[in-house]
View 1: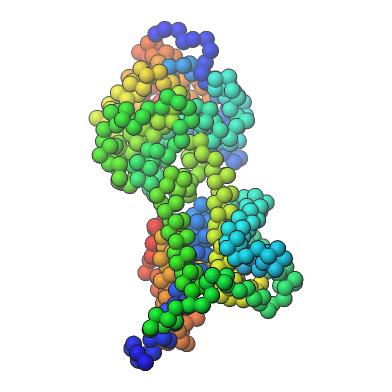
View 2: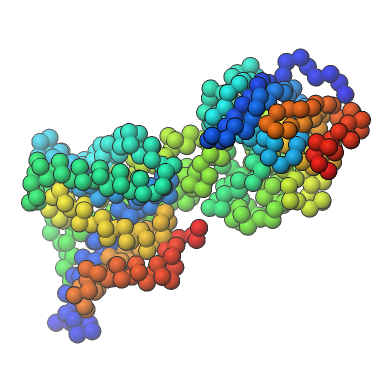
Length: 238
Length: 295
């Protein structure tokens, strides 16, 4: 693997976050360089999703630093963070029942030039084109996941935060999503992926960070995955 | 004289027209309430007072500034809508994430204060407001006499309701509103300024109430309690239509106005309670309302 460039696109430093009284993140530090696919691994409840939500400003009670293209994000509201060029695909997919597929697809505004147009999106996800008039939540789980990813590709954001995109999906759909992430990487998108399925992550990720108890506890590159397998099994309780 | 079901046609169609007029106001007011509830999750008990303020604003503009009805139709919803925006910014924003009860009590208290202030200055008796000269008189349709102003109120209300429905259900802005009703945090994380949208939506809902107030001014006396007289019925309309349902508010508003009018003809004793009887039946059979989606 080539050495990543010195200047990270996203630099998270000592990030702490709270849900009400509950202290969830205890000083998370990592970075993501342009064009990389970086995966946050860890068991349920270790703070992976909260890390993404704290970066996006959805979890508002947070301290520490999140810098994107040298701009500090922790002082910004989530709508301003999105417009800085970061797009978020949530774990629960967030497909809106009161919107049809087309409306769901066109919902996020374009925040920068360079987003994929609809023709390109339908090349990646041909199923969606056939279901444009269907209610968003009437799609299958796999189609909903495709829709959730597709709609953020239109926005022009260069950093994509994908929260467990393979959760609950059939192997053939997981394979398709892996292929899509590979295509997006080849097109220059930077991706921060949260996964529990490290077999899937191994097919797309350049580097891994492992989380436990709201902190990063380990870090290695994809070419060191085999050497770290035993440790990883311990971390993930596989 | 022509009779239908033993009732003179003039009386039957007269009550039907009255029902449609009331239905127009029910529809406009419940539409505003539905928009506000859908977006802010707040049961806006100030709505009746805002309707009354619309009527008073038109009255005061004419009395002190000589501004006529047509100009008031444009100016008043904007002025009262801006007052609504101030209320949202100062008060409602702080109770949005709490239980419905807090918003209900707050808006109910505000309604009492506003109504009390107007009663203090203008007394309880109504102030007259003439219809615009262009809409005085009427047409004899043979089976009934149709006053021009009332025909205008029905037509214009229907047009405003349908335009609002179209804006919410068929436009990009409307899709933002519907999505933010379901999951405001995610919509915001897409880059849409949801708090500003909430404020403007409240202002729009209040503007609809004020518009209804301007249209009501020439029909009813402009009085401080004109809103509180109507608001309970309007809430029943919203519940029957389905809380937050736009089409439900419009269809149910007009429909219940007509039902109420016909009840006045066939069983006058029940005319004040028929809407609430329907509400009970609907709540038992379909708790989410006729057009509402089950939670």
